Image (tube, one colour):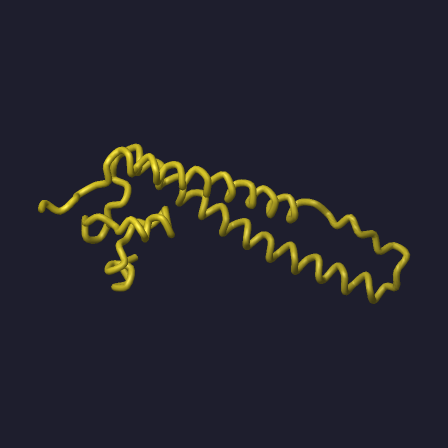
Length: 126
């Protein structure tokens, strides 16, 4: 039997549906993170002790930094998902960029933006 070199249109449509759902969720999460970074705290500390105010402001700053890092990571994830949609349109989706062989369907279902097969990933291909 001849080895499969690409996914058929039906399989690509299945992957596209999965990626679109993940993209919608990722975009929603990104917007939530972004708004938590840009909005100021609604908890007013005007009438509390100065020590408590300093502690609360420090915690808020740390929380905003963490949210900022998560937002950056989420933005990168969104870009990877969008690139996967482009590969679907180009019919190059699911092809390992190192070996040129088909990435296992199970891997793509778990990591739909993957561009490397397990073997190449384990080799440490960048």
